[in-house]
Image 1 (cartoon, rainbow, N blue to C red):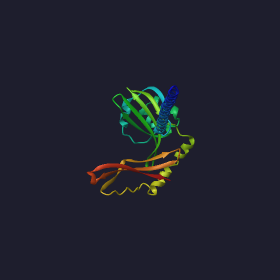
Image 2: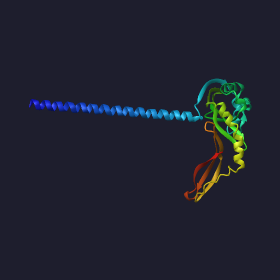
Image 3: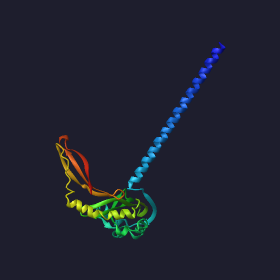
Image 4: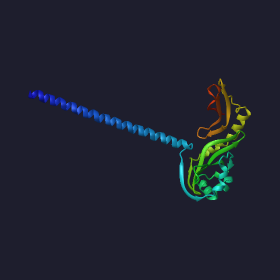
Length: 242
């Protein structure tokens, strides 16, 4: 009897140890899984940050008074002007800060837009573009200034391209000109049964990636589905420019 009791106690002890081992194993697997998931999320956030301005975003703290009234007119502006022509809008002190980042700012072309969040907080966005025969070519290089109560508080900017990239950019106008002259802008929209397909004029643009030297022409279009009580959808066609 005593020997059987010892054997049962031994078996029970072994089972208890196995149970504890399994519990610890499950906990460790769960912990590792959570760490892996956390790492994936961190990596995704890193990729999103890198893609946000077509490069890693940098930030400079400021405290520069601004003339807000001079910026109000540029809420829906699409005109590309040399950086020096924006000096009267942004003010010399803010231009000085931007030129610390990019000494060539005066000579390059930018589109300026103002975005309002409320009565005291808004953002000024400068987007680098190259005027061409086919319209502006957007380069994914931006400078944004956050302004609160008439004071510029922060300048964010994307990594500035290398000298080699700037050399590539100089070829863009001729590439666009050849593309236009060859009829490249005559994009055939899809033929969708029982639907009206129209170009979205606000979604037609050229863009350029200096790292890959890829120049593209994008045409957005809207589809009115006549057999679905006029339901709307949208899509785009992206054409590679030689």
